[in-house]
Length: 423
Image (cartoon, rainbow, N blue to C red; front, side):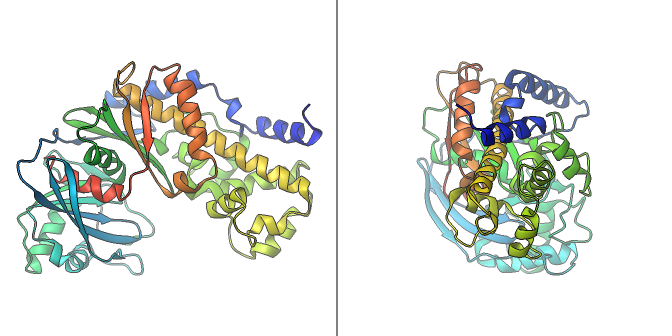
């Protein structure tokens, strides 16, 4: 028999569209598939579908070394990866260093000069793969044009520049080899290719990448020459509740990237702040909850890490554990956090299923290998389990999809190395 506290919490979640049960899988999948189809055919839409031109990897006749560079939002990493016909057989990495432009404003030329100077001893290979953290438009020759910047990387004239061309110009200026073949991809494509790198001979019908961290993206293999990067976080087709809308209205890009704001780690703290304030307003939490919370956290904003630590029960100094007055408040917080996690898993499951159906993997006799990456995927309590359950319940049972989800060690570096051989 459901308790009064459970019913009160459940009613709150339903009223504000925070419960996974508020969403009909078939309806949401149909909407998402329709938008992908329209966008792929050239129409405007909130979701982005960016083609990356590749060719099918051919077996290597002899061992070959390539340089894989990950230019991330925080650090730059570089690894010389050696491959043979069996896959990756060796990895030699340099120590990571801070991505230029984080602590000061610099030019594009200086940005690439600093990166090249930090990687000099790794520039002797004939093939270089670059995983670039900022948004880019891939070109058929393997290069990519930067299409958007980011607040944390302040490079004044980067937008519109070609990444590979700029890298090669910096290498030439500094006296390093500069005639290598350079391929530029993003982390979602890299994740998909990392599965390929480890299981070329495996019995899989295709490979996909799923990123669930600060943001969320999906990549799938459409055919042997095109892999699609779906900027799924930009999708605005899912129904949103009043709390989602209140939170969105406070952001500088209100009305955009609505799906990402509902689910991803970069927004969880902000969204949950609004959820908790509404819970206080509607007497689901005690009236002085935020007074106690503010005393504990001081000026620190709520983060996805705070939520994850509370759900796992692994940090005695967690701000929520230190705030709760009694078991009732602990119960309510656990239910709220778990519900938002379930909602995220269901909606992510819809987008993954949509990608696999676009890849024409329905009723395949062999599974798709999905590489899942991202701090939120790895750390959020129960997310991976809920996602797997929803995919089995709906994607497999109703969509005829076979899949395996794996987390691959060094996925971005491995996938970036493979990309260097695909043009």
